[in-house]
Length: 263
Image 1 (cartoon, rainbow, N blue to C red):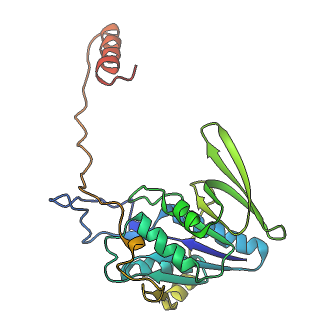
Image 2: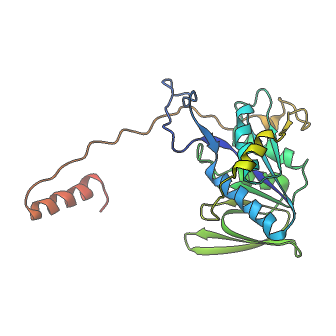
Image 3: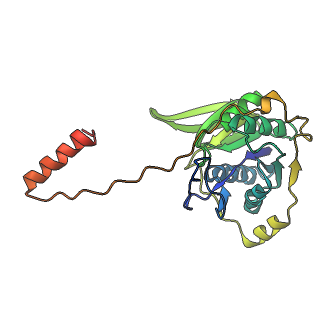
């Protein structure tokens, strides 16, 4: 069984992100980049499926510049078999629609039964690439799954997802696309031998020409644009209330009702 995991490299969630003075984006100098946490769940699940079945292949694929090779190698260190990087000049402005188009085109060059993605990328919080890839491939899609069972013989998957009304179980035929939610599994730590092996792993690199695409292709024109990036507002200073118990209750209740609008 062949599985492909679509991944993204994002700023480290533990790092302090600074916004450029002109609001055109974030300051990237000195910023630590990591594998998107939700994509980590997707990679782990693909590896577990391969281990349960006792056969198969796990390929990771991304759209991004040279620095994204670090995220690909971290997946190889976890146990992925192959890594593919798509990039070309002029793709710096690529939005989620362009990224989905590039990934779908790349996936058509690969053999796969199941595509896994993270539910969301923690930098843009769009949650749109996985469903868009499924649409472009004409494949069934189940989003934000918290459990997954694969029946290779029947060529079906059974996925569970959590909704506001409770658990929802979805069954569909392969090939299919799923996106991973937190709680699907606990990603493994890469061993030192695998980390060293990943450093020597050759990454397959595809340009637009390799994919049979042109930079002026209408499908590769961004449909969205970030107009301005703003830092979160500063948290106001706390307020200390003193007095008798009755006065304190009245003051706090008044704050929650009149200012916070919580009651």
